[in-house]
Amino acid sequence: MSKRSMFLALPVAVAMVLSACGGGSAAERPSADEIADVLTEGTEELGGVAVPQEQADCIADVFVNSDLSDEALRAMVEGDEDYEATDEDEAALTDLTADPAIVECVTPSS
Image (tube, rainbow, N blue to C red; front, top):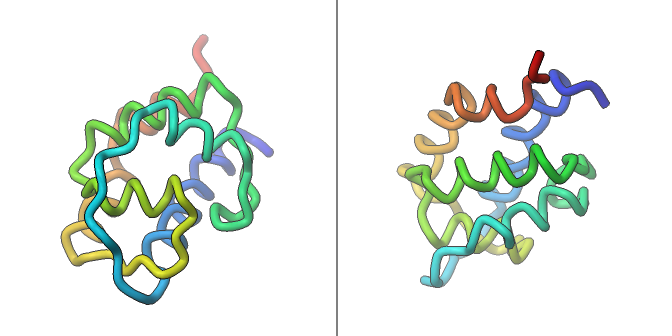
């Protein structure tokens, strides 16, 4: 998968996780390592997209430092299909799709 395709697929995959129906529970914010592990696994919940380790580490750092709630990140890490994203998390995810830091994570360096 090209880096551009991966960049386009990542927000869609995360949105699928965050838009599952049901209610979430409060949890501690996951670490960047936990998030990177999920991204490199290419789980079904994330559309089967396996992200290379270096890019996963970069993306995970952006997610940890984003406005996504602890609960949204925990739901992504745990593959919680019952989690329902809040309006704030939906807005934060939209912001992430245009975040220059995400673009930098998936753009090959020259």
